[in-house]
Each structure stands twice: as structure tokens, then as C-alpha cells.
View 1 (cartoon, chains in turn orange, cyan):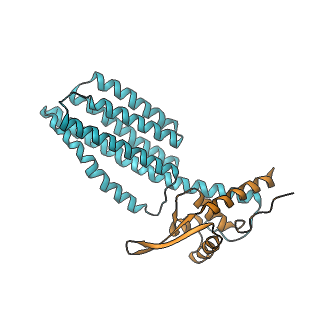
View 2 (spheres, chains in turn orange, yellow):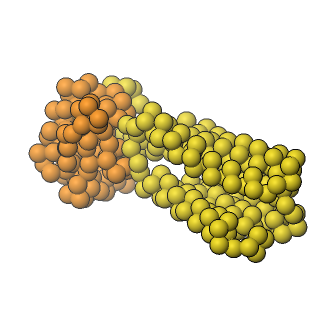
View 3 (spheres, chains in turn brown, green):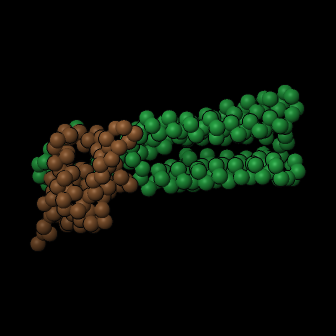
Length: 93
Length: 197
């Protein structure tokens, strides 16, 4: 019996975002956008979904006078990501 | 990766490939930024040490060593300029630890340098030996963190070779070790940059 994959993570853009955030302390919106190649609107929507699930923290602030959105993975998000990867491996064995 | 990630669902293999690709790309951009710092400090060390060597060698006055203080005065503002340019690139555990390691090196060297200049008699402490040994050690540990044998070996050669040279060579000529050290650190930066391009 295959384990059920977390539907929130089983989406290309959300998984890409979580993969980036799992390896860094925190990342700016512009960095994630550049790495994923996603549009600002789409990325914002997906970040909101991850944030609502408690997988990431989104902080809106300023860098000098420029608005700056920073994202950080939470322990809940990291655990969900690890579970997701472990489940994926079972599909491939 | 295609620069156009949508919200579509994937197979297990595609998901794993995406995770691995995203993590690798992110790691590369982060460590490439570290490479720039190696190049900056390496080039600065090469130039400053060679200038001091020339001045000391020509005039015979060891007080030119005070010009070492130019390194942090020039270096840290330049780090700020580089960091501003790469401001959006985040830190990961490796880049943070390497930065911390080199900051610790700077702190050790500054304290030893200032203490030896103001509180010890000249030549009471073989300053060059201590600094070059620490330099090689820090370089070596950086190589271990980056899993790069070229950097590990060059750090080892710099530290051990430099320590022997510092014992055998006297006065101004000792500074040429730091010029070589600077060249090695610059090369480290170029290796890191090309490895994580």
C-alpha cells in the first residue's frame, strides 16, 4: 500500500518553494521568484497556501525604503517536507 | 529546470528530481557568493602583504607592518558593497559557518597582532608563524566544509609550509608567505565560483 502524498506539497511550484526554503535560513520573495521562474501573482497565491497550512512564515517588511517579503520554513513545514520525501521514496522502491 | 514552474501534479520521480534540482541550484548560488568573498580577501592579502614587503625591504623599517590595519579598513566596506549586490541570495548552514570561521580567524589575528605590537617586545612572539598557521588551518577547514580536496590540500600546504618558512626565514621575506597565501585564497575563490557556477 502506497502512503498518501501531502496534496499541499504535491504541486510543482509549492514543492519547489519548499525545496528552496528547506535548505536556507530564509529567502526573499525575489530570490524564490528567480529560482522558480514563477510569476509574482502565482507565487504569492502558493505562498499564502503554504503559510495558511503553517508550513512557512511570510514576513513583510522593508529593506531601506523598498518593501521586502521574506519566507522561512517552520518546523511543521520541515517535518511535512521530510514525510513527503520519505513517502516519495516508497513509490520508487 | 524550465524557468516556468506551474501548479501541475507530478510523478514521484519528477517530484524527487524537482527537489534535487531546486536544492542544488540554491546551494550553487549561495556558495558562489562565498567564492566572491574568498577572491576579495585573497586579492587584498596579496596586494597588502606585497606592498608591506616592498616598503619594509626597501627602507628597512618594520613599522610598515602597521599597514596591515589597512586590510580590515579596506576589506569590510568592500564586503558590504559585494553583499549589497547579492543581497537577495540567502544564507545556508555551510555559508553561515564558513563566514563565522573566517570572522573568528580575523578576530584571532587582530587580537594577536594588536597585543604583540603594543604589549610585547619585538620578536618575542613569532607572529608570522601563528598567523600563517591559523590561515592555513582556516583554509583547510573551509575546504572540508565545501568538500573540496584542492582547498583542503592547499590550506594544509599553506599552514604547514608557512609555519616552517616562518621559522626559517627572517624579517621582510616572511611577508612573501602571505603574498603566496593571498594567491592561494584567491585561487580558492575562483575554484568555488567555478564549482558552483
